[in-house]
Image 1 (cartoon, rainbow, N blue to C red):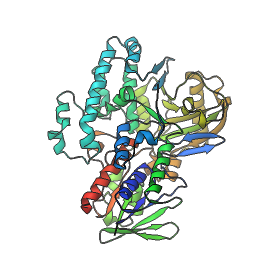
Image 2 (image 1 turned 180 degrees about the vertical axis):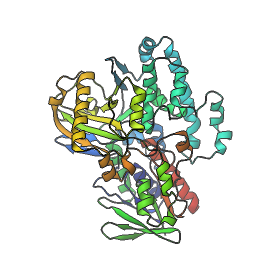
Image 3 (image 1 turned 45 degrees about the vertical axis):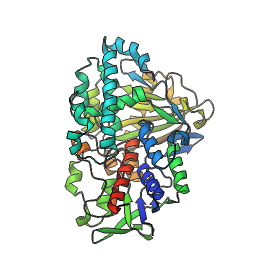
Image 4 (image 1 turned 90 degrees about the horizontal axis):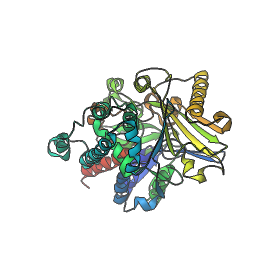
Length: 492
């Protein structure tokens, strides 16, 4: 008789572990509290506009390829992927604009103009980051962290070339003087929910994907990944339920034997996997303190990624001076990061990101229109009242009009929806309204929460809180790690 598995949460991690276990012959039930699967990787379709609501970058395609291969599927055939060129555009506060191309050599003029001799240093940086990625991928991304690997693995050889544990900012400043080049090469720390001063230099490996391996986009939107996983889940016989909020994990004698839904229904299971927010799982779904792996003191010490002030905007006109991925970087980089991570108010002069997927995908907007996904990193746990919300929105509109040179920007808007920390809390039970989870400091990378409960012998975790960490590829990898752990525990 096959094992019966209950999965709490239908985000990418929950869907991925559901497929892996179903492929292995488990009887899988998945419960999602919202009306759509996908978790943060979700969508809005309104007024003939389509928006991905969360992730908008598809990097590290090899992790998706590996996951699909376990399912005997071809990732590149399952999704209609295009490689983006240009990869992104940066608008600086002083008015300078830089368009970065997918062919690394086409960026030489930009780097040399910003700092003579920098382009060769940049290429060496990319080569080192490529080596760094393949030094850690198999030992630390597809498997639980084991400290013996630091001595015996490929990472030890890498340490002889550079210190991967210094901050990304410190590492880059040893080679580059131009503040603009440093911003180009360290902004991606926000993909990990942290600042360049706190991000270990090893995570500069994201630059390998940005500038060499490629940035991809699935036509139809990032949500096509969720749609594809849903389709595969149906083929594999996964029982998937939406509008099904789990209220409690039922536990007896250190074993989870079932779940209780908000409608009063109960289900019995042989093992349970939670893709819900880890704080929500540990402190709310587990209702007895003796069964919690992480006590209140842990949550008080935990350093969280920013939250976000997000604008989903439909425009009645196509915009010429932008590309798919765009950034506005303010001059005072350090102050902006400090206000994101250390202050309890909205940033005074924010940097922000604008995704305009309609530049490459015309089917997601009405003809002749454009859609903007504007994400402003802000401190977690902020409570934003209506007056602050309106004031901050107008500030962002003015910056877009001024810095991106879009005349009459506000008057072009014919669809608007705003997403704030309160929405992260209500939609995803996000601890303190975090957009991503625990940041990737060195300590919180090496000592991230485990993929299995230490107190309940058949309760497992997937998602951004556990190994290996934040981002779509990492969440998929977390499902692979947890899958291997379950098979090992059951000796399958």
